[in-house]
Picture 1 (cartoon, rainbow, N blue to C red):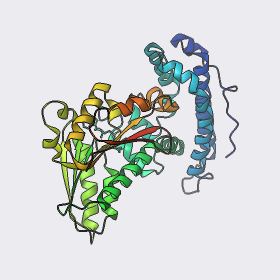
Picture 2: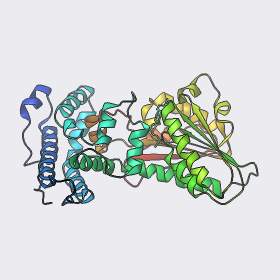
Picture 3: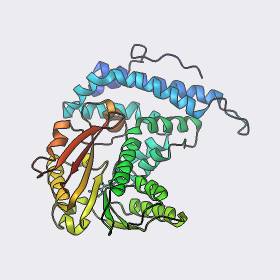
Picture 4: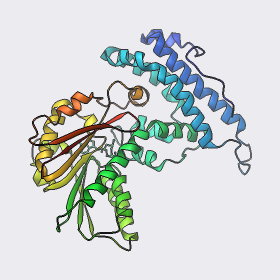
Length: 364
Ligand SMILES: C[S@@+](CC[C@H](N)C(=O)[O-])C[C@H]1O[C@@H](n2cnc3c(N)ncnc32)[C@H](O)[C@@H]1O
């Protein structure tokens, strides 16, 4: 499919709505270019969709969505400065959100991932179904256009896949170095679909030391979904050490007040949380990381993820999908480990450049 070249210069001028919302001309052009891009794809996909459903569709959904992703990146990579201006002032942010939700968001809602993220049927942003769409990675949607924009969201959400991979690798490494005959306890906070544990259970077929995974989530449906996926995987296994799964339907905020962390997590060898601390304020992050560190056994590992500040991810998440997170600097994330005695600390950025991953290891 040949698409015309998109750039900020040939973007339509959405000035009437923009001036009503007092949005900067630069941001107006980013939104205008994105809307025009999506409308052009919609029209072209529609014109190539066979009337008779048995005829094959001319274009490959994956190729088209990849082209769309390239065009989309071209537009949003020019947006860094105006996004900075938007996020530096809460009043600007509100106006930019209203403007984006009025014009751009509706162009994307045919894609199930966008719809789930924006409409929040489970009452909070970033639920386990949103995560599952990204992990599943396949086209979904009632129309071809819907499938293409669904795939665009999956491309944008690759940081979720990368941090899951990182969690999975870290579990593998921890388990490989386990010397305790009683095995290990690994806890995931805000576990969602716990895809990394599903994958681990599928492939961990050697060794004899028992493993316990404690899954904590405030959404009972997410927990049931994760528990079911893992137990189906375990049923299919012929070999492998015993794996015990404990589901805890509770808010991590309980750790801040009612329960001691070691009571809730026993003495964990590894505690990790990907995609949760971004929902919390600074004080909560500081207190929680200290309490979680206390709950670790000697030699244990605490892994915490948080979205990086000053990237263009605020566009699709906050402005388009109304998915509010706290984006943090390296200093801010590192400060969670301040005062943790003897801790070996490292901070890395995931391969997409959107997520920080803080590792804190307790001395053995
Ligand atoms: C963005 S998802 C991340 C899920 C998973 N860690 C992943 O990366 O696939 C956030 C998860 O945290 C859960 N969550 C949010 N606030 C929570 C809290 N206060 N206590 C426990 N779970 C929470 C949500 O229910 C959701 O399943």
